[in-house]
Image (cartoon, rainbow, N blue to C red):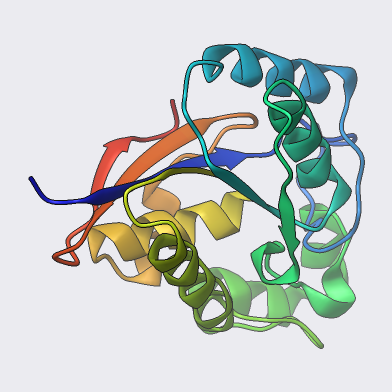
Length: 200
């Protein structure tokens, strides 16, 4: 039987201010009480998983989840800056409506080509892919045959899932990633990953 590494890919819980569409990106926004509850529910759901490691974005909304998931199994976790959300540069923290009003041409460009568009001082989806995918492959290589938790963000998780499915970044928004959701990806030694659960 082929050895596989199983990645439990988690999106952080609900964040403060999520009722307004905005680019939080790498801003260190905090979880709501509901967001913390979502992590506790996930911890209960995953309590029987024999995870050997946990990796997380170094932003608070993900680190708090790692603390909750690892506490019940007395397991350490590793924070990785590379797992941070897409950087929106000068647009960080700004609402979509504000951006459309203040920068109408740039906003149109963003909507027209969301793969290659960069906000001033920020990243595009190709940059995000080049930052995130090598880290996931490194984690898989480090933990062959094991089960591992990875806690990330909406954009980060979509990029990881698209890579696993062999799909381009332009398919980004064909994948839903709700707050506190769980994805499961099995990485086999033959290099063919299988997505077992999506946005669960």
